Length: 103
Image 1: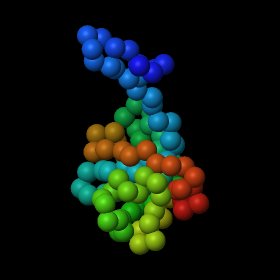
Image 2: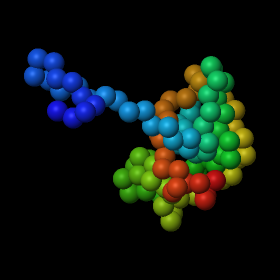
Image 3: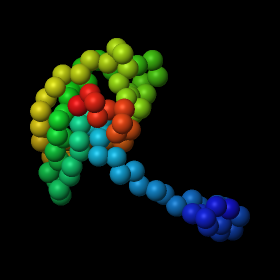
Image 4: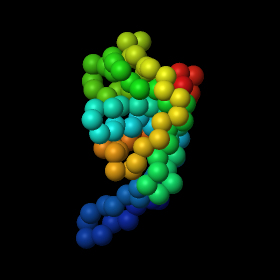
């Protein structure tokens, strides 16, 4: 049993640690996939220094990009993107050091 867990009736429960990554890949409705500095205020979402990911360039799916773009990833700079929270299908927390230079 670790410091951040508790065992109840033989089952270990581990404390969930939130990821505070400001850079996220955002999957939006209608097939849009973008990456940038994510902010949310209620239903209003903003992706700053955003790029649409036109070509993933991965061999293992979109999740491979959380550690940074591949040499085959194609990004289209988009500036600031604003969208409603209901347009978000999912977000992926990214490694800041791997993405910051590309945004």
